[in-house]
Amino acid sequence: MDDRTENQPPLTRRDSALRYLCAAVPMLFHGTVLAVVVSREHDRLGFALTEAGLGLAGLVLLRWRRRLPWQTALATALLTTFSTVATGPAYVAYVSLCTHRRWRRIAPVAAVLWLCTAFYAFMNGVGQATVVSLVTGTAVLGGLTLLGLYLRGLRDLAASRREAALAAGREQAQRIEQTRLAERARIAHEMHDVLAHRLSLLAMLAGGLAYRKDLTAGETREVALAIQENAHQSLNELRAVLGVLRSEGASAGPETPEAPQPGLDRLGDLFEEVRAAGQWVEVTDAVEGRESLPAQTGRHAYRIVQEALTNARKHAPGSRVRAEIGGRPGDGLRIRVSNPAVPGSPAGPGGRLGLVGLAERTRMAGGTLSHSLRDGCFVLDAGLPWEA
Image (cartoon, rainbow, N blue to C red):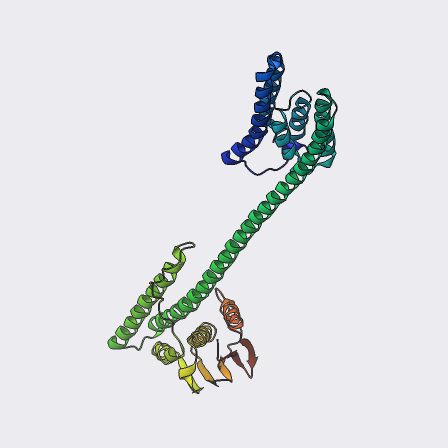
């Protein structure tokens, strides 16, 4: 992969200014030394100006250290052959090259930089100062190499943390989306249970009104009022459900109260309602300690019984339905709803979907649900844990 295409983090103005400052400090030091030398030896003014010009050229070359790292490091290293002022830009370019961890590029540039500084030292005479300069330059070069590798380590660590934060954000967004979809699916099940119950009642009442010729005016008025009442309740319940589904991704505030959900204590009202609509229901209620039944378990029980009665009206209209409910704390809640099976009765629109929804609801509640034909009767059995 070419150096110019390597993925690098964006450089802020502060970081860029800091790198130029690091290059300028050695330049100022060596420039001050040259100024002192020129003040004593006026004939070396041209030499000093050349060194200063090469140093400034190295500072300009730093502009390309990210796009052309090894080329910039090599060019600034060559400048140190004739200019100590250029060591500042050369060191910064070399550190920038080391952050790429390309040893096939780092090693040659390091060798060139060391040789250039050594050549400059020998050009000014051989002595103890030259040896000290070479040892110091070698140590500085090793330190710069370690610094570049350390900076790359910090950069990789920051990148991994950013990636981990992004991954955590994506995972959190996925969890939120999954939770939202699960909640919307739950609301859809609630809508199916509620509307199927209401519409089947309306169908039964309307069918009786259409085919019964012996009804008096008062009885006809009572049936019409029952149809009107059920239609009104259907619209209210539909509005309540659609009000939740309408806002995509929006949630109610902490001060918005949730609409009360029917529980086991509302089963009596449910039975009276279906009886008033003409469905024959025989109920056996043997639940003990119902005051300690969690509201969530009671809500599941209500929806199971409601859907079972709806199925009986759809598939065995006019038949007698038997509902048996029992259980106690520590033993769970048992529900059995049975009705005579009508041979060859069509499933109708949405057939079996109610049972699928009930099975999913029961499974999520930690219970079991089964249905079968026994002695000419369709029997639905459900078991729910007492504690939700």
